[in-house]
Amino acid sequence: MRISGKVIKYGDDINTDYIIPAKYLVLTDPKELAKHAMESLDPSFTEKSKDAIIVAGKNFGCGSSREQAPISLKYAGIKAIVAKSFARIFYRNAINIGLPVLECEDLWDKVKDGDQLILDLKSGKIENLNNNTYAQAQPLPGFILELIEMGGLLNKLKRMIG
Image (cartoon, rainbow, N blue to C red):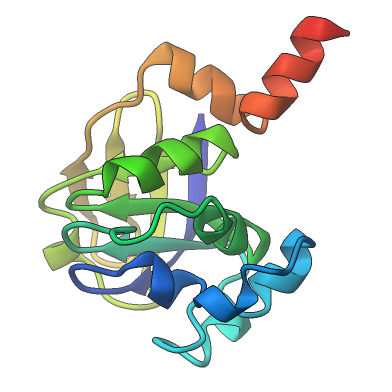
C-alpha cells in the first residue's frame, strides 16, 4: 500500500487543541470539522491540506483524547501523518478512522514544506522525490493495514456484520 503527497511540516508537541479547537467539538459533520483543522496553529492549513502528508516531530496528538482530531485532518485531505512519535490515544484514534500514521525518527530532518513523498505502509520505506533521500519508518502490522484499507474500524465491523 503506497501513498504519495506533499509535505506539511510541524514541530514537536502538536496537541489536539491545535488540531481541532475545543469550541468546534459540538460539530458532528466531519466536513465542518475539517474547515477548522489546525486553524489556531496554521491559518492556511485548509488551503494546502488536500492530498498532503503531515510530517511532525515528537508527541503528535498529545493532550485531550478526542477522536475529532484525526477525523478533522482526514476530512481536510490529509492522506497520512509521519511523526517522530505519537500520543498513543491519537495514534489509535487515527487507525480506527483509517488515517495512516507512521513513526519515523529521521524523516523530519530530511524534508521541507512542499516536498513530495511516497510512503510504503507495508515496508515503512519513505522516499522524498525532491531530494532523493530515504527514511525508514516502523512498518505497519498486517491487521492495521487491513483497517486502513477498509477505511477504519467501523467499516470493518459493518462488513463483518452484514
